[in-house]
Amino acid sequence: MKIIVENVAHLLYVKESLRNDDRLLIFEYWRTFDRTHIPLKALRALDDFVERITPDRTVTSPATIIRVRQKLQSDGYFLPTNPETIRKRDKQEIKLRIWLG
Image (cartoon, rainbow, N blue to C red; front, side):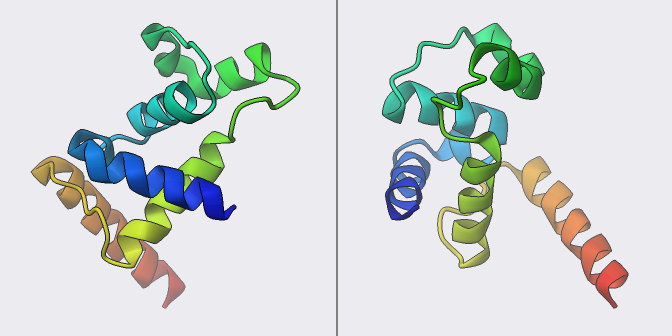
């Protein structure tokens, strides 16, 4: 798991655009670290793609990559740069806090 954290942190550091879009982050992670050539159009149906193309789980789970990005950003690292992304995530955080009480 430590290597995945380091890999995600590296990607978020070198490509600020990946801080705003989990699908692009996953795509870039697989391309860079798992050395898997995935056509860009596959991003539209990412979960189905993973199940259909890699049933043996030879690529890092999208959920793992997203959780690592979330953890890094909750610790204050590699925050999103797109104002719309920031607004949406702030709104979701408020909803979650209200729900949790």
